[in-house]
Length: 408
Ligand SMILES: *Cc1c(COP(=O)(O)O)cnc(C)c1O
Image 1: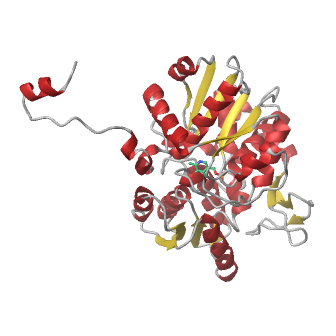
Image 2 (image 1 turned 45 degrees about the horizontal axis):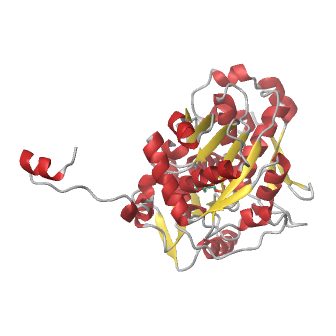
Image 3 (image 1 turned 180 degrees about the vertical axis):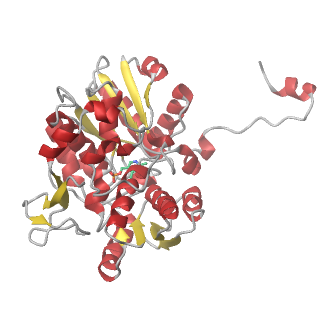
């Protein structure tokens, strides 16, 4: 039983059949999934959701599949953690961490979008999936496709961290390292998608894929007891996650699952790649592409596909945008580990670093509730902190050496 009506151009509203289409032939706007919200309202209640298994498919009526979910059956419903130590450290009253660094199976938020993309790709009868990736998507597509028994072609920029290459190759995809940055990889994939009948999760399947990000917002609201926080700080690469968290919260409001929506959405980027935050700061609705140069490689998209919608989200919600330096990213990674025991990747350092800045600037009042999005796992970007965290103390295997070297 399907709740998808059709695909619809976000810009001009022209509609298309629910196939592997992604761009409007008339105005080149992106296509979005259009649902039968009247039927969803009849069939889906908070009660129904709460009784379901703890994975992202508990919201399946609001996700773009037509049959039973077949992929990502353990993805999503990650912990929302009250960060007591961090509250004390920052002098703030109510901070939560939405922790996708423990998502299943590949430890990043990308397991959400890929769960939806592959379920849909199978419904559309594809036998091969592919993606252009800054790292986490490569792992996620490789792993989910392995589980689903699909052929997999993964395109990455060759400069990716070693640990991220290993975390893809282990799933045995065809891994293609392109001599260029992500934006060049993406351009190449846009050409390939026209020639081969593959499901590129973030290109021709993108309208379905992107909907997976809504579950990040749904879960925040449900886990707070069907309420939303005053602030959500979201890391931005292509600008899809931030846009869809907002869409998801608005859907919950319209369905009556939350009573009010008074949440400011804040965009977080690294100084070395901040086209979205720059546009927000300059109050411009034009995204000027940049050449990325940052340790936050998972966010290093210089020409973000949903950049203008990210800016629109921030504006509509009354939020802000802020960036941090590579040093601030590392500092924030260490704070999160030291205070809350969570080892996040550079993207999480960006989000926490930006949160700290926004609190210091007074843009986030210390008395208001804050959710910080932790979207990836630090074990994948160990290079970023390797020479910034000290070294072990070497001793001989006897008590004398222990007492000589360790000052208690
Ligand atoms: C992909 C990704 C994001 C968000 O990406 P968008 O393209 O803006 O949706 C955030 N954090 C991590 C770790 C990611 O891999």
